Length: 546
Ligand code: SF4
Image (cartoon, rainbow, N blue to C red; front, side, top):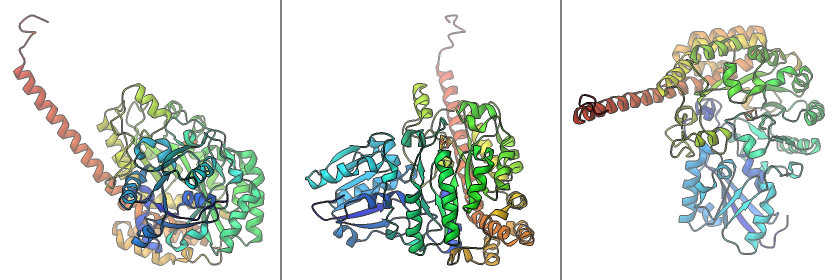
């Protein structure tokens, strides 16, 4: 859009909590980068601003804001997700102390706008639907306001190519692009469907290829993640897009290896699997949540029921794509311990990287509304984690149906078992026997320096840092190297992931032990209080008056 006046916009991407499953801090260090991935949302908004406005981006996770940044800026944009809430609030305060008007937006401000009331402007919902309105208001002199986009209406076919030029590629393990928004399913705990709706909207094929062209021309090579909520949410469009994507990859000699997130019903569609393999997809994140069918029905995740989930995962392996998966502990429908069943499932499916978290009632979900109706939500349930923890440790922000002690004990047992080095290495080994990479490109893209970090050196550094992993990890590495080079390369990536996941899981276990100790303290305190009360209360039964 056009604007009458120039404006200097400072975009600040807030810090994530320092230590979380997704930080992959130790793995980033191995490859010499600062963060797994870049702020795609902010650089997309940057592309929507008037051409006469100048934009400067500071990712606070990789760099510091300078006095010069503030002196230069007329206006600050910030915001992000729940794990960035604490730092977003800090940045808003910082802007106010510097006298800079600040605009906040993104998923968490959309779900919980009241938390960000201290900002000058709030953009609620998808920016495409409302950014022009904001620019017009700013130009006409408005210095505060709330701009709310109509829900699920943003036309993503009009979304511009993100301003990739604002990024320092060398700071990140991989970059992201987005093809679709929304998901057709109804999982009770999920905020995606509340933020982006249940009718997935997709970009056009030329639009997507234009984004890839820009990245290619800028020299980016290697891992590119489709950050979609559910990449296969709109299969009809996807079937048209994937052959074009595969053709683009062929023409450009496969500069990118793709990953994404998809629902497990991907496994039911051999044609789609083949198309994704042909486009050089190598990894899929799948939300499995629970091995218990009754729990899956109760959470309204019906797409995961009436199937053998492990077999579905193996079908995806058969198409040459590895699976990382999400699991959750703490659902109301868990009648007994879920730990053994979850561990058995993870081992049977042979999924090395599992994000196991405690159920968290996220703001703006069906789950949170139900718990509120039932009077079970904790105060401050919508506060993001602070630097002291993340969703893994801070979950169960409500009164659970099962005793909290049992849930925490289950959670602890699962983490202790699946991230034991021998168990992890054995899952990597078994995954590699099932991963059929015959349809994918084996060689790394020319120019992908990061991917070329030497395999032996990586394994050596991981086992030096984690000596108990030495034997199982070397054994797995040599088993995979004997099979083929592509298999060894993926095994090394999994071993590099363990550099973070192993120590992180042990830190989570410690945090859970603290929660368990707090529970013990509360119980002994309330027992002592009850005894004192009983001693001081007249025995009405003995007096015959009850
Ligand atoms: S499949 Fe994933 S994105 Fe879709 S509703 Fe369920 S949790 Fe949300």
